Length: 200
Image 1: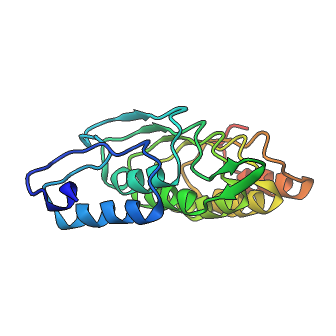
Image 2: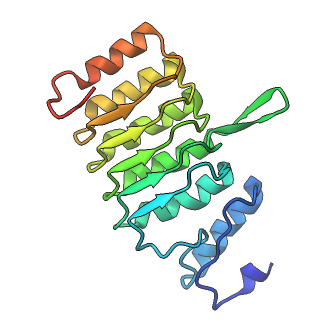
């Protein structure tokens, strides 16, 4: 409530608070209504690198970060490895959160300065691979993407291959330990065939 009525606030950091979707959406709407409020993530937007390795980031954090990643024109490297952007475990049940990967993928499709993105071990799943494909295809400066250990599976691998085939900038792709089958592996290999700059 205090945030919703403040007219002088320019910066606040709300990451790592495990907000639900309703609260996260509310914060984003508040930011839209207050032009002076530049960041919900404690950023200056002049950063060239962001390191959120193993910070327990989840869906809410991805949704708060994504709009800011989209407009950061000096940003070249982002490390989001070892987080829970794609979902989390509740006891023995995995709760998938496809909105997280979709938010990051949307930012990827808009940002024009990013060259390196680490998303290793984020529980992206097949939906994550599908969500990232359009952003990968559209991005013109990204050269390195690590999405290892995300359980993409055959479906996610196939979708990713589509984006990879279109990408004109990517030269490194980390996809180890993703439960890919032989067909999806073949599609990924074919997607980079003929790309002279690509390093396997």
